Length: 322
Image: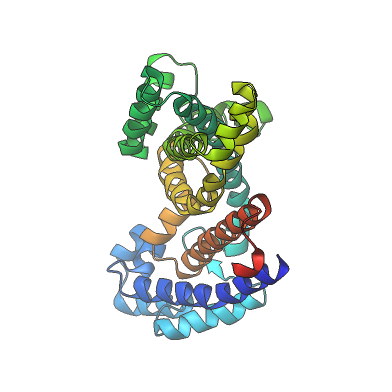
């Protein structure tokens, strides 16, 4: 296990280098001017000399390779630079927003996995039944629905139509402090929408895995020995059928991050995704590089976690072969 983690760590280093270099290259080719985004309306009446001095102060007058190298060497020492759009150190921006994004994704993932498992098992018990058709039809419909459409539908139904849940933000409008109760009530809709967007994948994977396991010889042998259907399903088929889901956990991390970006934008959730949008539109090189590096590291960690879980729970897989 330690050897596998070490190999993945060595592989992650060049990946992160290429990703950060690509961020600076793409941002440099962007038609957006970071100086005008930083100055705002004041840039409309400023002369070219003032804009040039501002470019020099922000460091955007240098080639993108020089900016990337300066950012990389500073990041290795813990200095991720200053965010021009947030007017704060990048480390502070990420630290303030990361906890809310982590809370949103954790709650959504914790809701999607057990719900998808239950629906998948119910559908796999009797293939072709009314319940199976209903579950698979619902899964395919949700899979085709855009995340932002689900978010807008949830706001219309639960906020505008019935008024049972707040439409967005982190706390109530008139509140001067963040309380656990307000955060919990404001978290229900964005976390629920994000969980629903991930639900079809887990449901369909569990249905397929458990359905295949029920047709295997060990399960048939368990039934022939007189074991109850509950024992066969939970003790044999479910254990074998959940193995493919372990690999899905890591592969769904990029989709979870993309979905969180849209959900946070619609619900005005103060997470990393909202900062990513602002950094991209304002061509905020240091913040954009830090956020992209963080997202890439999350994907790599998710893939490593999936492989480790698969190796731990599947006796046929050896870490030395991975």
